[in-house]
Structure formats: C-alpha cells, structure tokens
Length: 298
Image (cartoon, rainbow, N blue to C red; front, side, top):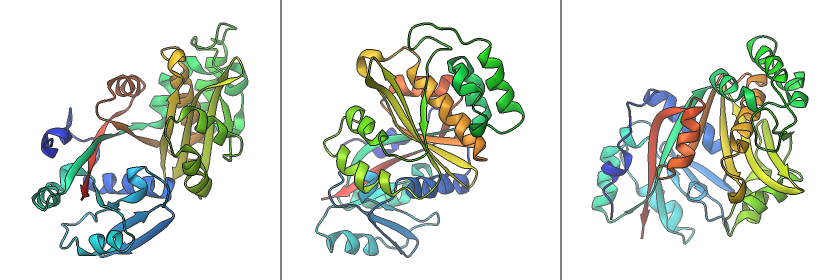
C-alpha cells in the first residue's frame, strides 16, 4: 500500500484556495452525474449501477472537518457495494484520510486537478485553429478571444492532419453521434454504459468535441460549463496519432466554446502518473490546483 501523503504531495503550492477547490469538485460532480445522489451531513453520496468509474460510485466529503463516516458506510452497504470515499481536496482532508487508513480503507488512484485561465488556453492553442472554426462567431464572444481566433485564420495552412493550423475540430451541442466516438476511443469495458448512464444525463451546457482522420475517430474531448467554470473531460487520442497536435486542437476548441459560455476558468482531472498528458496541459496554461485519491473498503 502506498502512503497517501506521498501520493498527494503537489509539485507546487495549490493555485486555488480550499473554497475554490470545493467549488471545482461540486462542478465536476454535476458535470459527471451519478444515477443516484444523496446529501447526508454534508457528504455528497453517489452511486451508478453498472458504471465502474470510481467517481461515479464514491462519496465526496464536506469542506468542513468530517465528524462521522457512518452515513457513508450505511449508504453503500445498503446497496451491497464497496464503501468508497473521494479524498478531495486531499491537502485539506489529511485527518479524514488518516482515519480511513486506520480503519483499513485501501488507497486508490492518485489524481491531479489542474486549472487554467480560459484566455490563456485560447492563446496557447491558437495555431491549432482552422479557418472554418475560427470564424464561427457563435462560439466566441466579442473582444479578445474572437480577435485571437481571427488572427489564427491568417496562419491556417492546408497541411497534413495534426500540423499546427490545420486540425478541424467538430463541436456538437449534444452527445448524439459523439457517443460512438467516445465508445471507440475511451478504452474502458463500461464505455457504452457510461455514455448511456452518465454522459447522456449531463444537464448543463456541454460541448462534445471530436477530430476525425481518414474516416475514423482520432481524438475527442468534452467540456461542461457551470457558474464561470468549465470542466474538461474524456480527453483521448488514438495511440497511432499522438504527438500530432490533435489534443491541443481539442483543448483549444473547448476553451473557445467555454469562453463563449462565460466560463473564464477551466479545470480538468488527470492521473498523477500520466506525465505525457500533464506536460501537454502545462504547456497550454494549466497549473496544479489540488489533488485527490480514493479510499475503499473492503
């Protein structure tokens, strides 16, 4: 068993205070809805039968110090599933983490939550904008973001897919056909169930982004806006097409869409040991906000 303190030590000081970190986690919970949710003593309890993703079947603690875990244990044991707690923000729930460790809860999946200013990501990914997308005024507000997009038009060239300035990103307002892209690129056994039971249930404004290459899904992402924040989810690129700028293009399209919905900050969640993805996100302006992991029993 790894020590959770080692797993959650950030590379730098968290960039947002605990109140903002808590807001991000609440936004993320709404953006990735569970089939069953309950609030008990400040806990957000989530359960999604048939879905194997931990965040769909875990309890998010309140921002204040936790007095009791009994409501959490009862909720999951009544449903015949393991008791799982998302220790988030981990930096502010060390006492809870230690208590659960002492009770025999095992630690799982260290995750870093990164945040960025939407405008910074738009600027950093501008070379990946295509002429057709840059002139799409419906997804950009008047002012700086739109100006950046118009400037990118002058740099767009007809060069092979993935080269800077040439990646066309499809942006849809509902999952529809995008779910087939998700099932193709997601790489998990429950992808179809997640599409049906999670993604199709998203209530907030959302953009479903995809890149195609030679008639096949090549890259994807999803962005969900809520109260000035927009969460980036489901980022994936076909292994044989990585390092061609597709992910940056998807991030850029998502950032421009978010700006058009009034979201001036972005957040995303990435596994701590996924160094390649973290390097990409840092290059386009994301910095460390906070971390989380899960504690599960039995």
